[in-house]
Image 1 (cartoon, rainbow, N blue to C red):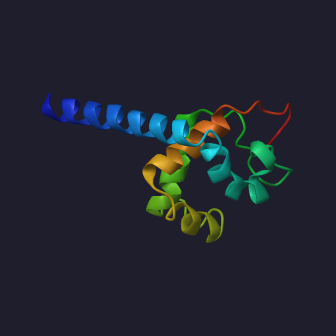
Image 2 (cartoon, rainbow, N blue to C red; image 1 turned 90 degrees about the horizontal axis):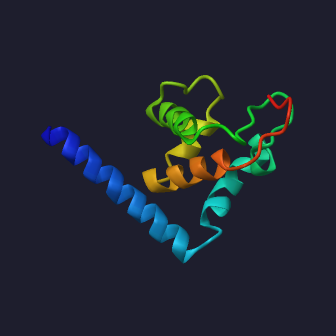
Length: 110
């Protein structure tokens, strides 16, 4: 029970931090996500051969980012993703994942 309460407190704290960051800069999430645009397309609408991120659930994007960060997916996309994700805080990654999850996916996108 104590672990649950601690986890819940961390989630509430992270949510509050994200809300405060976005309140300070309405474009923060998009600005952070812009680093992803060259490979995953503007607003996550990728060209063929690369995964589109637009409209994917935030939890799925966070899971994938976490796998790159931990090294579990290091060989899948060369060396670029593992290097990139290590430069972001957890809160920044959550903002990026939230941003892409809110974008409308293109029909037939990879």
